[in-house]
Length: 439
Image (cartoon, rainbow, N blue to C red; front, top):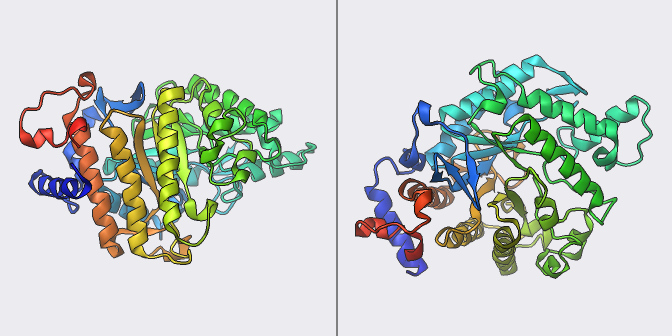
């Protein structure tokens, strides 16, 4: 079936499915009752819930905790969950850290603002569950925003430690202990609104060790590899139920010189990350990859961006299958409206490219497990826009693309059981259209 036929057929099916329109939320196709709100698990190279496949169509909104901390902006958290669920998005990636900054969660090492925990992070987790949205919670930042590794180094220096680089975060035993204390505080937190301990809450899809870790001071990758090895096992020792991922951008490093051709530029091999090696660490359950052709290749929009996105995704899906045996999630992807040559038509083409590349994996039971848009914003938050914000109510064509993909994903999740491994009996023509060898 070619692309146009598939689009037409999917839309026709969408019109005849109960509760699958964008106004109702495609997630309702696979809606679950309170007693069935189970942990996401992994089987081989796919996610499962109750032994049913769980393909992800999701989004990022990193600032939820900061907005929830202030009564005047808390409603925006509810709005973004409501609007995201209305187009069938089922997973949100957001920050579970704010280190020593404005409205800080962690004011100093191991010292927390209970009001921020209670009013902000507890609320975000509780509110997500109401809309049947699961959360990937990132535990710190490589970048300075909201504290991150630079703040941990500042804290270390304040106690007299001899630290010369922000990358000392990865290697100094005291800073490692600070990070572990934060992990412990979050995982053992009992949500004051739900009375569920975070590490027992199925609303949480996964823990992310760090947003976009890089260690440029050690291009060999050994320093970051050591940190990942330590922290993945530490998180798993405290919480064996939840999935764990690293938070990497996906750059190939020294251990896979033949894959460096897929990197967006030569600098990417020098940032201390190593996609395949990093993800072979014990305790890491799935791979993460980010996609920013406009940041990595050229600021000016061009067709080469689309070609890069396709080859970048296909390379990582292949590696996840061949070397890692795990799912891969494209955990950030987007394009900035500030880029020269930008228009919404290009953004739609870019999103379609990501979705169709994933569907090509899905139809053969491959490792492409889902994607998370960067990023979904509710109305009235333009002042937070980094150029990548998608306001669904103002972006009808983009909303339709997202909603249609959600419908496809929900159908896969609803109609296929893990045990059949896509070898299902085709009971009627409608079902046949959505079996993976017939896409």
